Length: 197
Image (cartoon, rainbow, N blue to C red; front, side, top):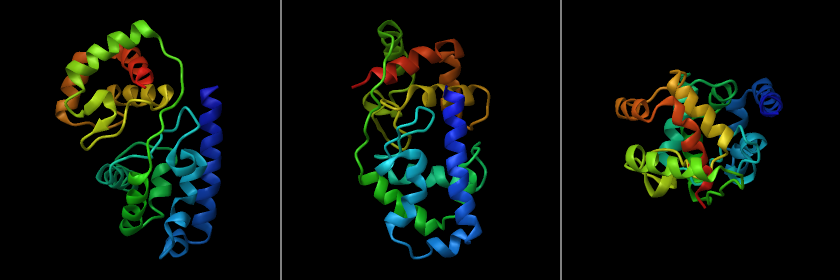
């Protein structure tokens, strides 16, 4: 089911990208209103950045600096992606900053999803020991990182696997901590972040 959702999302995003590319995205978006800039985002990330698809993260409430840094990594192909690298290249640095300001002001809406209580309890202890210093308030208020608590579980699971398989870069500190957490405990963290209300 998730693979079908990913394919459908990729197809929709591809259509948006192709449309922008064919009309020269840089020219189309130059001087555009914020509403016009975020229009391509809504197809995957939902209205105001609140995702309805389990393989796609909610981006509302992201800190401005984190949003800009993430888009820059996509733009420079430093972060692995099927679609985002192509989309990010259609925006100027100024436009990305404009979008970042918009999403930062929008409230983060947690996904309503099921979780395993026993695994969540185990994940809470792992988060407290290894993740809380950067992902504050149980992953709800990061200093310069993404929001973890309330993100869709399939997305969190995939990104953690990406870190372990080195498909996504991470800091030395995070690498050390994830190594201590262990790949076998990914499900505990996934269930914990799904449990935070």
